[in-house]
Length: 120
Image 1: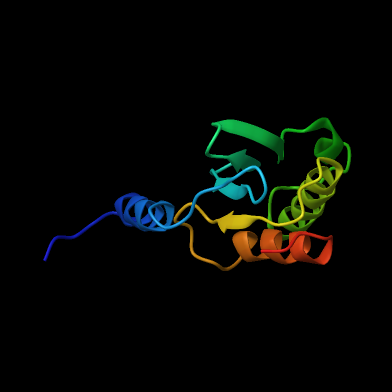
Image 2: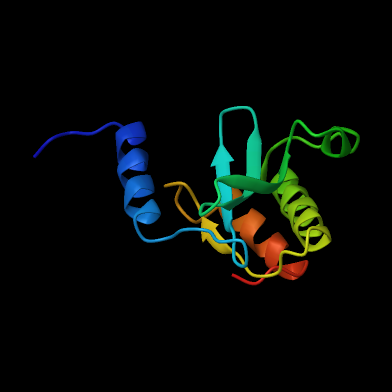
């Protein structure tokens, strides 16, 4: 049995998830990426290799609200992402949690996006 770091474990989960899901123009991949300081959200069409919409904690609209990228910030960011997606005529998405466990900020983003019109 090999001992793996948390990063290696996350990368293995991420590869396992990505082998099963892909985004299309009709149903793009809703990709969540979390770093130590920021949260990034993208709607990706994998068939054409195009990002359809994006938002992050670095956006001007998010920074104006003076919210940290914690659980409360993740809820606001999920709402912002859903609004941008609906504006870009995106209603159905495939959720890609990028190997992160589905709790905390990832779950808050998903729940806020669902409440604001996205269907997973």
